[in-house]
Each structure stands twice: as structure tokens, then as C-alpha cells.
Length: 90
Image 1 (spheres, one colour):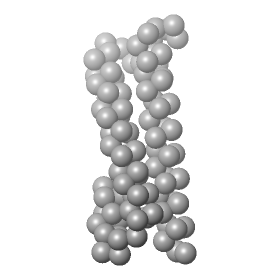
Image 2 (image 1 turned 135 degrees about the horizontal axis):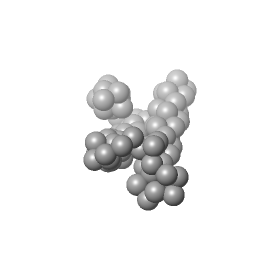
Image 3 (image 1 turned 180 degrees about the horizontal axis):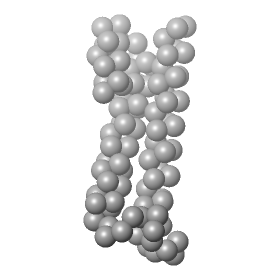
């Protein structure tokens, strides 16, 4: 919700670069929400803890991939939000 709130606050000034960065942050947050939902579903569907599955298990490997992707999306959100703050200060 933070990128959406920032977008609403910046809308009045209508600075295209900041609006573009905030829009990108919203897209990244949406993608992360989708990935996190899938991760949560995988946890709920698994009869045992994901960490208890063998390392070769396709479920564990997919879970790890999704978790890594979710982390990358979070880092990208922070970088985009930071860029929006830096651009706004200038």
C-alpha cells in the first residue's frame, strides 16, 4: 500500500519520472503479492514442512525458486522507492 499512497500524494505534482517510478513499484509489489500467495499455498498444501522435504524434491525446489524470486522483487521495490525519493529531493 505504501507505493499506492505515494502515487496518490505525487499525483498533484504530476512529475512524470516520479509517477513512472511509483507505478513500477506498484507493479513490483503486485508481482510479489502473487508470488507470496503461491508460496503460502504451497506451504498449506504440503503434508510436511517444506524444509523437511528432500533437497531433490520438485516441490522444495519450486518453493526455493519462488522464495528467491520474491526476495528479488522486494529488493527491486526498495531500489525503485529509493530512486523515487532521490529524484523527488532533487
